[in-house]
Length: 159
Length: 258
Image 1 (tube, each protein chain N blue to C red):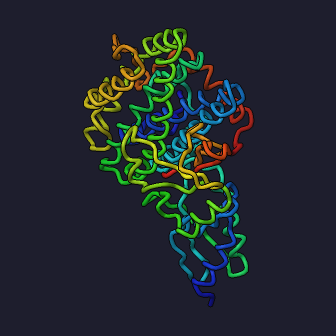
Image 2 (image 1 turned 180 degrees about the horizontal axis):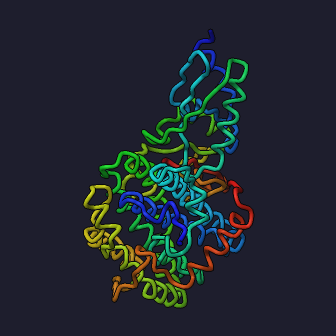
Image 3 (image 1 turned 60 degrees about the vertical axis):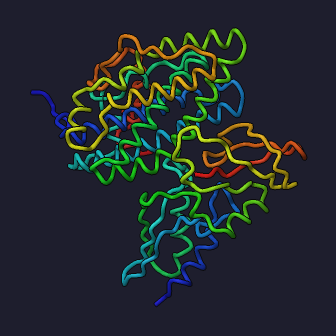
């Protein structure tokens, strides 16, 4: 019988296709793993309601757990995924990759037209940055530009 | 004999879920029309991102409605095999994109309403709707921020942009009025504790909208005589053309999946 830690380890190699440095474990998308006689049951939360990467993520989880048994994916939307579920290690990996990690807590997004956070440039660490567009290369990112080093960069929205 | 469709005789809750789903799908489809036509790449991407969120939300609602209807009904049946009269979206969602200002004015009115509607749904007596709303409200706060910033940019921009956005906002205000007019669908949902009382949302909506319009150096909103009927399935001519394009593939190839 395979144990849960082993499966978690295996899932650390399942990367988000749109942010290839973060695993589903770093993102905190895996809610639970239940090992039963006939199958492994994994509860997976979507990042965004309309995230087009979800089908691929489900498929990759099944592939990664294939050596251990048949895997059944259960999508869950409650409690909703927020960037608070992302691990600290995940946030560090994001910044090293060139994407500014989410600033603040997700509960800040419950108010309409709240002020924007200060986002640090992942390259030169300057806090003098400006928002270019709220919606970047994917729905979960905004496009920023650093005023010091002039580099444009992606910011993983606090969500 | 008339052929009875599975969704012809829905209970009030299912009807309400369909109303929510139809708004998200129809507006999502309208925004998707901008794909490849945005004025600059970033804005093209922004509108299609919002479209993606709305279509994702529509799927959540349709999947739920399909479960409530049962009898093998699927989200695809509901999105692709209902005709115009069965759709319960607000008329504003189906209004054509027009120019950039028309699209953003429509979005600004809708997003602001959508935010407060979801706040109400987060208190719904229905657990599934509460869960869907809790997820969608965060996405919607980004949509609302985006459209409000554009209203300010256009209103407080050049003389031409000010004049154009003023015209777009005034043209669409009577359509926004429909949000707050109780229809049969709303009254039934409210009686069940499933949805918020829409007439109660008017005050906070107007207040928020006016605070942005003031920053944009524009006049406060005047809702005027309401253009309504969408929630009862009585749509404008634009609706049929939108459905024809959106549903043609599914109807030409029955059983095709997304």
